Length: 319
Image 1: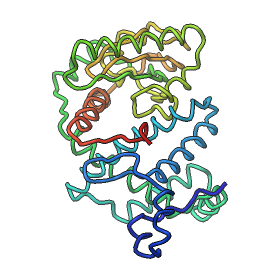
Image 2: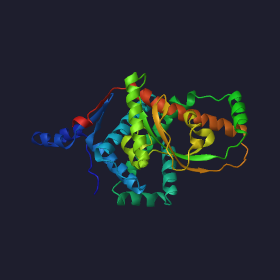
Image 3: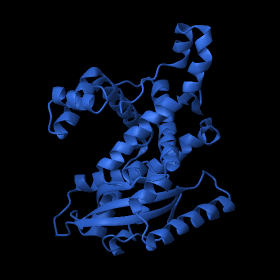
Image 4: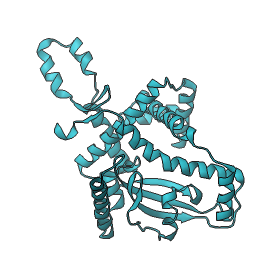
């Protein structure tokens, strides 16, 4: 079914006769206020439909509808804060960069840009809609680069220590997934205990055979929740510091017990391992690995920080 076209309510009210206004208002409603911006139910519906298609394409079991809506809206709220930061910083994406990224996406799908546009139309989307989504993602990456990556440094001493500890071996990589139960900034003991109990409950469900991806979609506070918690492949040198002592001891398919970090409690699944020979890491490779690990360590905490400083009124459960 083609997604419903949404027209901004303010514009509808200008164009519609007064007698139709009550009916129009009923078609849409605000599900969240983020600082000075509103997220409409129609916007949420479109994103939920996209998430549902993505989960089906990745063969991830569908969580309950309310859990999926809650997860998608939470992601939208974070994105809105990041986009507001991009606007305030006067960041922009030029057409050359956007066009190049769109061509790259089409090529990764084995298509020309025209073929990609036709495929999108068959699926009920337009190239213009996808361009706007990609533009937003690129802006968010710029914000993260500006606020997180730009403040990270790697010293020569860190590189020396890193190479000495690992004997230069750079070839072990892990395919990881996680479920994060977050705690707020400066949490009370009760909040920490509640998050720990929730993480422990999920760990027990996993031990009893629950599906990790489905639980991640429904329950995780991580940005990768809608990908079933999949973190992709990470070189051993790039995995977050808090995981470094746990992951090498996991068997394929095994899930760690809850791991505490400043962000909350993590359940980490080792999906697969590759590499492990004696290839030597250069100083530049070591520096980049340390840098990426620090980014991974900082990003979750930064996301919680910006959410804590924003005005958020989530109305989904009240609608």
